[in-house]
Image (cartoon, rainbow, N blue to C red):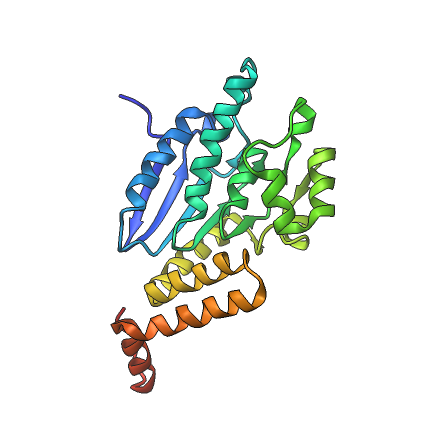
Length: 257
């Protein structure tokens, strides 16, 4: 029986994905990426999806990087194909219409950092270590790190990290804007539970619209982005969700989304 590399837990549309290669510190290889693509095939078809949380098995590592043993003997053509497979899959995760949150529990290096960067935001345990150390192996980041990292932390800090290969702790990751919050391992689990409740209680179509407005607006000039926001705001008034949410507020009760 083949090993399950992506564990899936569903709580009323809040789906938690756990990358499970603990002996390899959850390193990304072709099999993990392929299995993640298969999971995304299912998630992309779901109308009831509300959020995706992604983490790594155990308390030592989120994802320690791409699998170096698998990459070591690749030809340039094979390396291009491997990177292409990873980039396509990570982009699909990034463009899910719902919030995608990285729960970083330990090492978050190389491909792991690139995976976290594709999430809408990241929360880290206080033992987390971040970095893009690929230059120490004679290569550059290949899963989007040279492009998403400067968009998250600015070009100067990104060039610092990708050219020195230095690692940073959770507090520095927080300071530069790589993660949103830092907490203990126990608090990280509590945060995941609270986030599940919070997102589960919000209007699902409104949440999707809010994410779309931010993501799509970033690629437009301000006037066009504001017009997009107005259109998406108006669209909210075409469905039952807005009426239920506002009626619940006026009637001083919880909405039933």
